[in-house]
Length: 216
Ligand code: AMP
Image (cartoon, rainbow, N blue to C red; front, side):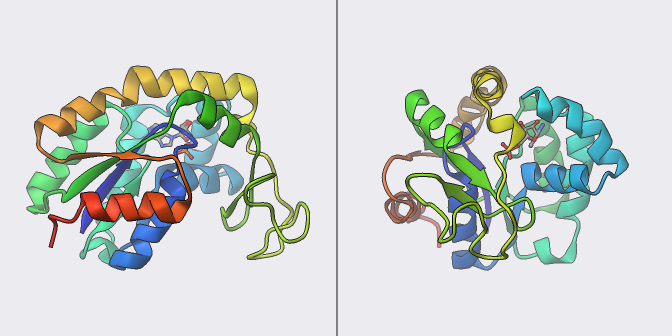
């Protein structure tokens, strides 16, 4: 099963990607998580990516395409994957299409999670993340059991630098300009499934599964 999750920051791609990963038993490939790990580990990629991420800009296409190409070649991707946060530009989508054509591994679906902007801002401004295991919390809707501490691994939670209000606005603008056009790109290819992203994570997941009902 090869699925792309599209949607603006805060739409719930990470959460739904995790549920899809469990359902289909294929890895979730979240480029934002990969880049944040590289920044933490101060690798060359991390040092290069950090300045773009802090500014709410996209990392240059040639950098992220190289990272994803290498990841998709790993043995755990043979049965498929959930792409979360990639592609984000038409150039990235074209590069992915080339890789998939060469491997004879077509996509099964592109799921676009739709959430109004006011709700995205509410979600992102209350979001706290575990810098260790990437678990996500919300101060009102999904607080950790012990304030400020990750339920899963006990690490101190942080607010992502790019979840601050000025950067959130920039990321939403980047989504509208550079990533939203991918909906038309995949609609043309008959792959797009648009999903209402409001409601509980279980409700949204049910909608995604229903929309993919025609997939064996
Ligand atoms: P995310 O966690 O998916 O919101 O990604 C966080 C940040 O990582 C983005 O704002 C970008 O700076 C960078 N990033 C993640 N995925 C991509 C991508 N496919 N292309 C370019 N930049 C990306």
